[in-house]
Image 1 (cartoon, rainbow, N blue to C red):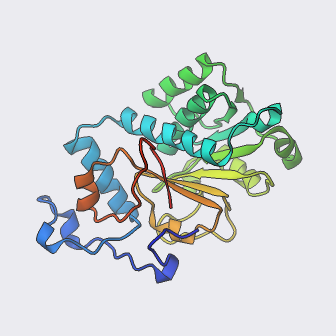
Image 2 (image 1 turned 90 degrees about the horizontal axis):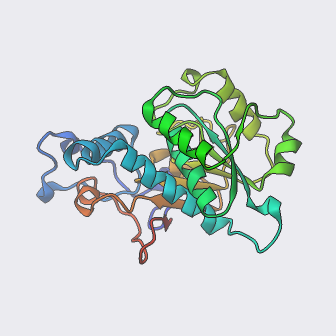
Image 3 (image 1 turned 120 degrees about the vertical axis):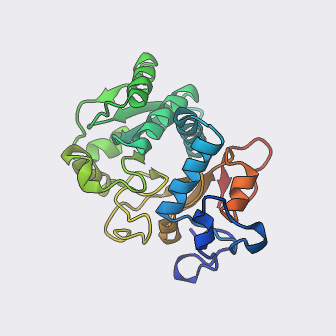
Length: 269
Protein backbone atom coordinates (compact mmCIF):
# COMPACT_ATOMS: atom_id res chain seq x y z
CA UNK A 1 0.00 0.00 0.00
CA UNK A 2 1.50 3.30 -1.07
CA UNK A 3 1.27 6.55 0.81
CA UNK A 4 -1.54 8.91 -0.12
CA UNK A 5 -0.35 11.75 -2.30
CA UNK A 6 2.72 9.73 -3.21
CA UNK A 7 3.36 7.64 -6.28
CA UNK A 8 5.30 5.18 -4.10
CA UNK A 9 8.42 3.23 -5.05
CA UNK A 10 10.35 4.59 -8.00
CA UNK A 11 7.48 6.86 -8.97
CA UNK A 12 7.35 8.66 -5.64
CA UNK A 13 7.24 12.42 -6.11
CA UNK A 14 8.61 13.02 -2.62
CA UNK A 15 12.11 14.43 -2.78
CA UNK A 16 15.03 13.66 -0.42
CA UNK A 17 16.20 16.25 2.06
CA UNK A 18 18.89 18.54 0.74
CA UNK A 19 22.33 18.81 2.30
CA UNK A 20 21.20 21.96 4.08
CA UNK A 21 19.09 19.72 6.29
CA UNK A 22 22.09 18.38 8.15
CA UNK A 23 23.70 21.74 8.92
CA UNK A 24 24.11 22.56 12.58
CA UNK A 25 22.10 25.73 12.18
CA UNK A 26 19.18 23.83 10.65
CA UNK A 27 17.57 24.44 7.26
CA UNK A 28 16.88 27.85 5.82
CA UNK A 29 13.09 27.94 5.66
CA UNK A 30 13.32 30.21 2.65
CA UNK A 31 15.16 27.39 0.88
CA UNK A 32 13.20 24.53 2.41
CA UNK A 33 13.45 21.22 0.55
CA UNK A 34 10.52 19.83 -1.37
CA UNK A 35 8.06 17.97 0.84
CA UNK A 36 8.27 14.19 0.75
CA UNK A 37 6.94 11.08 2.46
CA UNK A 38 9.92 8.95 3.47
CA UNK A 39 13.05 9.31 5.62
CA UNK A 40 16.42 7.77 4.92
CA UNK A 41 18.19 5.97 7.76
CA UNK A 42 20.43 9.01 8.35
CA UNK A 43 17.46 11.39 8.33
CA UNK A 44 15.50 9.19 10.75
CA UNK A 45 18.50 9.18 13.10
CA UNK A 46 18.75 12.99 12.79
CA UNK A 47 15.06 13.39 13.62
CA UNK A 48 15.48 11.20 16.70
CA UNK A 49 18.50 13.24 17.82
CA UNK A 50 16.40 16.39 17.44
CA UNK A 51 13.78 14.95 19.79
CA UNK A 52 16.31 13.66 22.31
CA UNK A 53 18.82 16.52 22.34
CA UNK A 54 16.87 19.65 21.40
CA UNK A 55 13.47 18.80 22.84
CA UNK A 56 14.93 16.80 25.74
CA UNK A 57 12.50 13.94 25.34
CA UNK A 58 13.75 10.79 27.05
CA UNK A 59 14.46 7.58 25.18
CA UNK A 60 11.93 5.78 27.36
CA UNK A 61 9.30 8.38 26.44
CA UNK A 62 9.81 7.77 22.73
CA UNK A 63 9.73 4.00 23.14
CA UNK A 64 6.56 4.25 25.23
CA UNK A 65 4.78 6.46 22.69
CA UNK A 66 5.77 4.18 19.81
CA UNK A 67 4.80 1.00 21.63
CA UNK A 68 1.43 2.38 22.71
CA UNK A 69 0.66 3.59 19.19
CA UNK A 70 1.69 0.21 17.75
CA UNK A 71 -0.77 -1.54 20.07
CA UNK A 72 -3.51 0.90 19.01
CA UNK A 73 -2.78 0.05 15.36
CA UNK A 74 -3.28 -3.64 16.17
CA UNK A 75 -6.65 -2.86 17.76
CA UNK A 76 -7.75 -0.91 14.66
CA UNK A 77 -7.07 -3.78 12.26
CA UNK A 78 -7.86 -6.70 14.59
CA UNK A 79 -10.60 -5.51 16.98
CA UNK A 80 -11.57 -7.76 19.84
CA UNK A 81 -14.45 -10.10 19.06
CA UNK A 82 -17.32 -10.64 21.46
CA UNK A 83 -16.29 -14.26 21.92
CA UNK A 84 -13.56 -16.74 20.93
CA UNK A 85 -10.47 -16.80 23.12
CA UNK A 86 -8.13 -17.53 20.19
CA UNK A 87 -9.10 -14.25 18.56
CA UNK A 88 -7.43 -12.41 21.46
CA UNK A 89 -4.04 -14.13 21.24
CA UNK A 90 -1.03 -12.23 19.86
CA UNK A 91 2.57 -13.39 19.61
CA UNK A 92 5.08 -10.52 19.91
CA UNK A 93 8.60 -11.38 18.72
CA UNK A 94 11.22 -8.96 20.10
CA UNK A 95 14.86 -8.37 19.26
CA UNK A 96 17.60 -6.92 21.51
CA UNK A 97 17.66 -3.40 20.00
CA UNK A 98 15.26 -0.45 20.25
CA UNK A 99 12.58 -2.08 18.08
CA UNK A 100 12.46 -4.91 20.60
CA UNK A 101 11.85 -2.41 23.40
CA UNK A 102 8.95 -0.96 21.39
CA UNK A 103 7.62 -4.50 21.02
CA UNK A 104 7.70 -5.05 24.79
CA UNK A 105 5.69 -1.86 25.33
CA UNK A 106 3.29 -2.90 22.58
CA UNK A 107 2.70 -6.24 24.33
CA UNK A 108 2.04 -4.50 27.65
CA UNK A 109 -0.55 -2.19 26.13
CA UNK A 110 -2.21 -5.07 24.29
CA UNK A 111 -2.68 -6.72 27.68
CA UNK A 112 -4.24 -3.49 29.00
CA UNK A 113 -6.55 -3.54 25.96
CA UNK A 114 -7.65 -7.07 26.99
CA UNK A 115 -5.77 -9.01 24.35
CA UNK A 116 -3.71 -12.04 25.35
CA UNK A 117 -0.13 -11.36 24.25
CA UNK A 118 2.75 -13.80 24.50
CA UNK A 119 6.34 -12.64 24.01
CA UNK A 120 9.24 -14.43 22.36
CA UNK A 121 12.43 -12.56 23.27
CA UNK A 122 15.30 -14.94 22.50
CA UNK A 123 18.29 -12.58 22.76
CA UNK A 124 17.72 -10.41 25.80
CA UNK A 125 19.42 -7.04 26.04
CA UNK A 126 21.32 -6.00 29.16
CA UNK A 127 20.19 -2.42 28.61
CA UNK A 128 18.37 -1.11 31.74
CA UNK A 129 15.40 0.06 29.66
CA UNK A 130 14.91 -3.41 28.19
CA UNK A 131 15.21 -4.96 31.66
CA UNK A 132 12.64 -2.57 33.09
CA UNK A 133 10.18 -3.20 30.26
CA UNK A 134 10.67 -6.96 30.62
CA UNK A 135 9.93 -6.72 34.34
CA UNK A 136 6.75 -4.75 33.64
CA UNK A 137 5.52 -7.45 31.24
CA UNK A 138 6.38 -10.21 33.71
CA UNK A 139 4.57 -8.39 36.54
CA UNK A 140 1.49 -8.17 34.29
CA UNK A 141 1.60 -11.96 33.82
CA UNK A 142 2.43 -11.81 30.13
CA UNK A 143 4.03 -15.17 29.32
CA UNK A 144 7.45 -15.43 27.68
CA UNK A 145 8.17 -18.37 25.41
CA UNK A 146 11.41 -20.24 26.09
CA UNK A 147 11.55 -21.31 22.44
CA UNK A 148 9.67 -20.71 19.21
CA UNK A 149 8.19 -23.86 17.68
CA UNK A 150 9.72 -24.70 14.34
CA UNK A 151 6.48 -26.41 13.33
CA UNK A 152 4.65 -23.48 11.79
CA UNK A 153 1.23 -25.09 12.21
CA UNK A 154 1.52 -24.83 16.00
CA UNK A 155 1.96 -21.05 15.79
CA UNK A 156 -0.81 -20.65 13.22
CA UNK A 157 -3.18 -22.61 15.45
CA UNK A 158 -2.27 -20.85 18.70
CA UNK A 159 -2.29 -17.18 17.70
CA UNK A 160 -4.48 -14.78 15.77
CA UNK A 161 -1.53 -12.66 14.61
CA UNK A 162 2.18 -12.00 15.15
CA UNK A 163 3.93 -8.68 15.84
CA UNK A 164 7.41 -8.41 14.32
CA UNK A 165 9.60 -6.24 16.58
CA UNK A 166 12.88 -7.99 15.85
CA UNK A 167 14.98 -5.58 13.76
CA UNK A 168 14.78 -1.85 13.17
CA UNK A 169 16.51 0.57 10.79
CA UNK A 170 20.28 0.40 11.03
CA UNK A 171 20.32 -3.01 12.74
CA UNK A 172 22.18 -5.57 10.67
CA UNK A 173 20.53 -9.01 10.78
CA UNK A 174 23.82 -10.81 11.37
CA UNK A 175 24.46 -8.86 14.60
CA UNK A 176 21.35 -9.91 16.53
CA UNK A 177 22.31 -13.54 16.90
CA UNK A 178 21.20 -16.91 15.63
CA UNK A 179 17.97 -17.22 17.69
CA UNK A 180 16.55 -14.03 16.17
CA UNK A 181 17.50 -15.08 12.66
CA UNK A 182 15.89 -18.49 13.15
CA UNK A 183 12.76 -16.74 14.42
CA UNK A 184 12.64 -14.60 11.27
CA UNK A 185 12.96 -17.71 9.12
CA UNK A 186 9.92 -19.13 10.91
CA UNK A 187 7.90 -15.91 10.60
CA UNK A 188 8.32 -16.02 6.81
CA UNK A 189 6.35 -19.28 6.72
CA UNK A 190 3.33 -18.24 8.79
CA UNK A 191 -0.16 -18.04 7.31
CA UNK A 192 -1.60 -15.82 10.06
CA UNK A 193 -1.35 -11.99 9.76
CA UNK A 194 1.97 -10.30 10.51
CA UNK A 195 2.34 -6.75 11.86
CA UNK A 196 5.82 -5.20 11.45
CA UNK A 197 6.96 -2.26 13.57
CA UNK A 198 8.84 0.54 11.76
CA UNK A 199 10.27 -1.68 9.00
CA UNK A 200 9.76 -5.35 8.16
CA UNK A 201 12.66 -7.14 9.86
CA UNK A 202 15.40 -8.04 7.41
CA UNK A 203 14.48 -5.40 4.80
CA UNK A 204 17.10 -2.87 3.80
CA UNK A 205 15.69 0.38 5.27
CA UNK A 206 16.77 2.37 2.22
CA UNK A 207 16.01 0.14 -0.75
CA UNK A 208 13.61 -2.41 0.68
CA UNK A 209 16.07 -5.13 -0.34
CA UNK A 210 14.82 -8.63 0.61
CA UNK A 211 11.24 -7.41 0.27
CA UNK A 212 10.52 -10.21 -2.20
CA UNK A 213 12.15 -13.08 -0.28
CA UNK A 214 11.83 -11.69 3.26
CA UNK A 215 8.90 -10.99 5.54
CA UNK A 216 5.66 -9.95 3.83
CA UNK A 217 3.69 -8.18 6.58
CA UNK A 218 -0.01 -7.48 6.28
CA UNK A 219 0.35 -4.36 8.44
CA UNK A 220 3.21 -1.86 8.75
CA UNK A 221 3.40 0.67 11.59
CA UNK A 222 5.96 3.34 10.70
CA UNK A 223 7.38 4.96 13.84
CA UNK A 224 7.71 8.78 13.78
CA UNK A 225 7.72 8.78 9.95
CA UNK A 226 7.90 6.17 7.17
CA UNK A 227 11.34 4.99 6.15
CA UNK A 228 12.32 4.80 2.47
CA UNK A 229 11.76 1.05 2.24
CA UNK A 230 8.06 1.62 3.03
CA UNK A 231 7.63 2.54 -0.62
CA UNK A 232 7.85 -1.20 -1.37
CA UNK A 233 5.28 -2.22 1.24
CA UNK A 234 2.29 -3.86 -0.44
CA UNK A 235 0.31 -5.07 2.57
CA UNK A 236 -3.24 -4.20 3.52
CA UNK A 237 -2.70 -1.46 6.13
CA UNK A 238 0.03 1.14 6.67
CA UNK A 239 -0.05 3.45 9.68
CA UNK A 240 2.28 6.17 10.89
CA UNK A 241 2.74 6.57 14.63
CA UNK A 242 4.20 10.05 14.91
CA UNK A 243 1.65 12.21 16.70
CA UNK A 244 4.38 13.08 19.21
CA UNK A 245 6.62 14.70 16.56
CA UNK A 246 6.32 18.50 17.01
CA UNK A 247 5.03 20.48 14.03
CA UNK A 248 8.22 22.47 13.61
CA UNK A 249 10.25 19.24 13.44
CA UNK A 250 7.91 17.95 10.74
CA UNK A 251 8.43 21.18 8.83
CA UNK A 252 12.19 21.07 9.29
CA UNK A 253 12.29 17.55 7.84
CA UNK A 254 9.79 18.53 5.12
CA UNK A 255 7.46 15.64 5.91
CA UNK A 256 4.19 15.44 4.04
CA UNK A 257 1.98 13.14 6.09
CA UNK A 258 -1.77 12.95 6.73
CA UNK A 259 -3.23 14.75 9.70
CA UNK A 260 -4.27 12.93 12.86
CA UNK A 261 -7.97 12.81 13.64
CA UNK A 262 -9.18 13.98 17.04
CA UNK A 263 -7.03 12.42 19.74
CA UNK A 264 -5.77 9.53 17.56
CA UNK A 265 -2.10 8.64 17.97
CA UNK A 266 -1.88 6.91 14.56
CA UNK A 267 -2.90 7.89 11.04
CA UNK A 268 -3.62 5.60 8.09
CA UNK A 269 -1.51 6.07 4.98
